Amino acid sequence: MKKILISIYKNSLIFSYNTQKVNEKKLLNTNVIDNNQLLFSDEYLLNNTKIVSLFLKELVKEKKIKQITVITNDLALIALNLTKNIASIEILYLKEDVSLPYEICEKITKNKYIRYLNCYNVPTFMLDLLDKYGVIVKSRIELFFTSDFMQGNQLTEFSNIYYKLSIRIRFPLSKEDCEDLETFLKINRYLQTIHINKVNKKDIDYLIKVLKENKITNIKILIHNNITNEKTIEYLKKMNKKYKRRYKISFSLVYSSEYLQKNVFNQLLINILRICGLIILVLVVFVTGYIFISNYFSMKEVTAIQENINETIEKKKETQKEEQPNTNVENPNNPSSDEPVITNAYIASLLSINPNTVGWLKVNNTNVDYSVVQATDNDYYLSHNFNDQEDRNGWVFMDYRNERADLDKNTILYGHNRYYSGIMFGTLYKTAYKSWYNNKENLTIKFDTLYDSMEWQIFSIYKVQKTSDYLKVSFNSDSEWLDFIKMLKDRSITNFGVDVGVNDKILTLSTCSNNNKRFVIHAVLKK
Image (tube, rainbow, N blue to C red; front, side, top):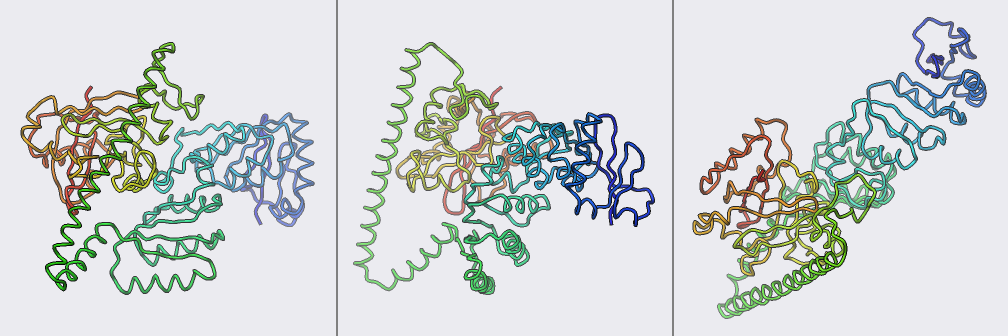
């Protein structure tokens, strides 16, 4: 039996655990230590909440109390239950130096009188929820954190968590990731798909466990891994059989396009060896014709989209000429928000076509002169164009991890290498020619965002075996950053003689060179 002390100090009602020796038999009721201290057993409070609440209501009125102070967070739910009908208590002070748990946050939103919360730290999505209920939050460390799980799935607002249809989980999970995943499952009501990066029995068992605990059903778990091990495949079949019928939780393997292409090619090669030369000739003619026609229509489609984009920009320019000049463009989604002010009107005009627009990229003496978009993952715009239509040419897009306003240390832009048609990043290969990079005018890349116009100086161009080591967006120290820059410069086809310091930011353009290589350009933001 726990002993709970309710004491009064100035204008605050303080809830804490009593550490003094007390006759526990008497605690079946209550001990009044003095006029400003009350001692209860947790069992008594649980069974007599209404009586104690009425008593505290009179006490609060008499002492003119406006605040409840909770020494440890596990007492907060008890304190909120006892004071939920006391209108004069507007302030909740959580003294323990731990992050605000969701259960307490939810309880606060159901209390119609609490208007101020002082605590150690608040996850971003809880801050958003409390704000919707008019609760003003003061964090003692002024750091609203988010775990890798929350950040990777862009779960920074309560509404995003509630309505999210699909999430990505990268195993192994940290303790913070596990806590936030479990909180997400308690809140969300629309989840349909879970993408995971690998199969590990321990991780799968944990995922199934938390889904069952939260009574989550009708879920597809997609495993993005080129699995060929028969034991692993057999394990997934058993999991399907075990959970699909009862819990409607299914498992599916999603193989990479590179893996599928490789295996399809091998099978095709075997079949070609079995057929006659005439069919081979027909196939070659057909494929050649298909590629030619496909590239022709691809160019036409992209040209049509570009013409529509340019018309939209021109209309915006004409409108601005007629209207009073205004260099600052309000955020079209939320004019009263604290987000940075949009200053590039020509890019902002494209938000009416695609609200995912984040900027414009131009590389001199190439065909790269495109608007740039950003999705919630790095897959969507591999197969969708600027009009959000399915299109194998995709579009030029920013890494989903990058901030679109206050750019990260490394801002990454991707695009398909459509070599034959020359669209998207299909002409970036020209930058590796001496005749191109010896022209100093070509070494400045223009990349504008909604919020700024910027020029970037190329300091590295190279081809590299398929790797993700150049795709980091944040760094833990200056030395890690400088080692990263040295790696990029060492790979370069030539020394461009450009310094990159600890305070600089860089732009990375990445595309395929072939199935196993990447063609990459790095440029540093000019001061």
